[in-house]
Length: 370
Image (tube, rainbow, N blue to C red; front, side, top):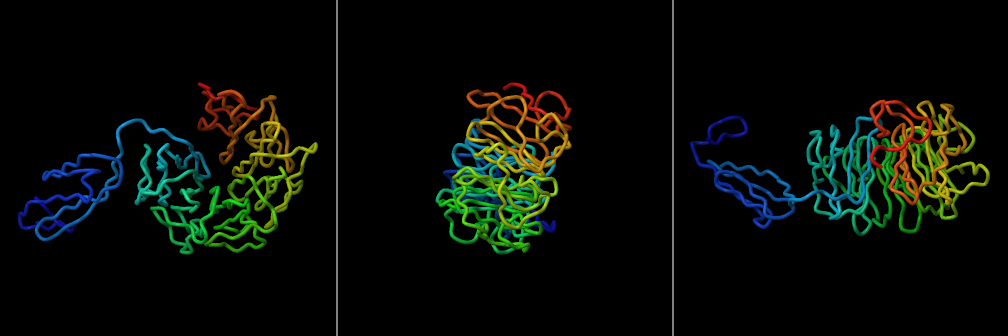
């Protein structure tokens, strides 16, 4: 028996079912949906002169294959998104601000596709928002937008992707706690969102709802947005950071916050390559594949066998060489160069290090199974 949204009986009428794309899914007159292809489809029900529509995502059978995965959230309880091999983005985890991009605010424990027909190449997962780079250079964001971190001028949160305002010639996008940064194709950096500690690097403390250029003539090859700070490495291998520096995470030898880019101290004339920004610490890999970290260290996130903070880079212990690195709020993981081994260090109270224990580690430990 068909009923309206307020529970009224619709004069005993039979329900008629319709689909707008039978190549993606068909629907029987009993309301059974049968997937035929891959994509979004609108299913419409009509009864007693009333109608309603539901959006259904159909995915072809077979295992998901991810090209890249990125973890969000500022605690162990966050969300995760990945770019599949076909350019679709799948997300799972907490969703109270719509950061999964599913069109609702319902959390989920299994991957589900973001509501978009666009093809994406990379992404960045923030505190309660997510941003992704589409083919062609446009950036789309979804989730919390109270500081303008979605970059669409609105300041209104969204459960589906919205396009970041301005010219879309981005090559990289990274999401921080409540801010977002991206690199243009020419290596110039732009940031938007929360800026009370200077994490946008534009010389002010004002929040921005659209991309704003990082102050200076720096040409970056890589950058990453942390909890309340941002770091990048220029094409001549010099590290720069801006924003919160209460734990020394900027690496400039001070604990003073900065709303413009300050140079990371090049300890022993070390140059930097890849960079990652965590909650209150930062790490980077030098061109010779040695890893260095600076900032907070109460959980061992600098991996120098101590729990002492440092406002200049310290060499990660263990003697390993790395080619990829990524930081969570209070831990870091890195791929050992020329191998399939993954090492992690720092906070481990919920098993973030993946070594079969829940004991923090102030030196690199091998992830089980690698």
